[in-house]
Amino acid sequence: MESTWFFLVYACCMAASCLTTAAQTNISTDQSALLALKAHITSDPHNLIFTNWSTNTPVCNWVGVTCGARHLRATALNLSYFGLQGSIPPQLGNLSFLVDIDLRNNSFQGPLPPELARLRRLKFISFGFNKFMGIIPTWFGSLSKLQTLSLYGNKFSGSLPKAIFNLSALEVISLSYNQLSGTN
Image (cartoon, rainbow, N blue to C red; front, side, top):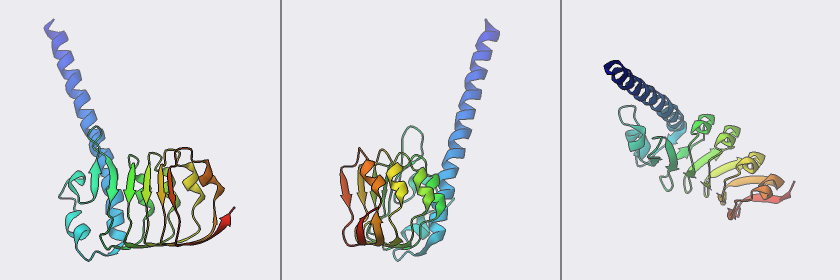
């Protein structure tokens, strides 16, 4: 009986240790992705990111980052109205638990990296009033849970991908103030 009790306690401790290690590994993935974003920011006029996002502070305490209670992974990224300038790195596509991303009213520029297509949990995307350019990526059409897609006030050009019209959960789409010309 005593050896069974010991084995049960030992097994529970080992399971807890494995879960802790897995959680740390996963949050380090999120940390690396967010630090890559920080490295791609060329101007942070209020020093909100440059002074707050540090390996000395838990990711879930970083300004603009919200983590889920269950897995302690980044579920929301809200950097709206921070006045940031820079570009979006491909590593942002590693934030696999992200549901909500709000980067509106900054000066992010360049094309959106295709790695963002890996963010399959996304329900809300707000990239309005930035300087994103190029065509609107077809991979938006693969984000089956997407409910809101706001890309207004950028420099997107070309045709709107037909794949976007297959998003059955989509409730809000805002594409005004771009240089779009029909669908393809």
